[in-house]
Length: 282
Ligand code: C2E
Ligand code: MG
Ligand code: MG
Ligand code: MG
Image 1 (cartoon, rainbow, N blue to C red):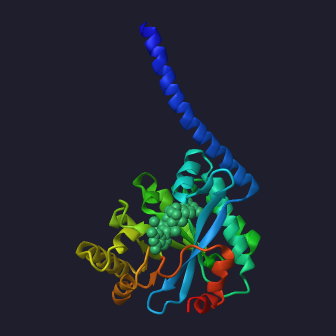
Image 2: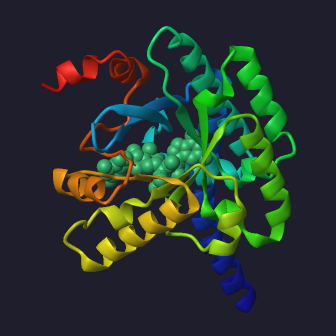
Image 3: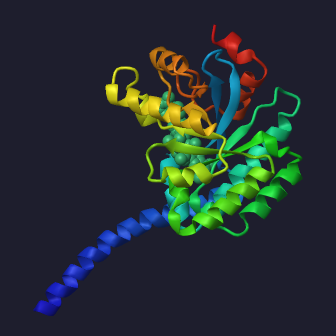
């Protein structure tokens, strides 16, 4: 009898598991399909100078519109790819598409394009060689590429190796930003040693500016820290003129967010590189 109960219990878990497994297997199969057919897309979100509103750069953001699954957000794709050991392939495809796009835009105004990296990409021995190969293949000057890493990339176990890698990246003329700054746990002592160009003030601190007294203090502290360390600041998720004005008044150089533009497909982003975006906005 107990054996039978045990077996039923097993079956129950088993059917739950297999439903989850089926989901996961379908996602995996579709992601393989997307990688093979190179159907992952890259959209571009403008970054602007807050004082003048002019374009300073673009951020490349992964978009996946699958014919079976529909749209799958990066918040879902990236962790999935990391779990399945496919993040290097996803990252390589994003970087390749960005470099190909930059080459296609070579006759337009040139601004750097920022690419987001997963910590697992940075832990791969092949990363730097792949990056060099990709830039060379498309003839892209390293100054046109910026890499965004999060504080989770900076965990102390591999601090020395990570520092060496980041220095090698910077030595090529590639820019480095810390994304979602203020939400991680990296120590200021470590941060100070890193060859960074930019801190990206996380959207969670920008969202309630200028009304939240706490967020005002946090933002001013980050701006002061950046100034002291000689780093630029970009505010993420700027959605209102009040936020933009507050940030500009407090010497935050750049912003990005829906106030200016969401991430756009390449042909739409190109309008920002030719000045046409301004005409469209009037
Ligand atoms: P992130 O790098 O911090 O990118 C900013 C996210 O905020 C993007 O979401 C962007 O669409 C969204 N956003 C921009 N402006 C606003 C705004 O004004 N309001 C609001 N509510 N949201 C705004 P997205 O594209 O869904 O990407 C989410 C995260 O996924 C990214 O956060 C990044 O961590 C990761 N990600 C995206 N593409 C890639 C990629 O190619 N590789 C890797 N490793 N990660 C990526
Ligand atoms: Mg980013
Ligand atoms: Mg961010
Ligand atoms: Mg973010």
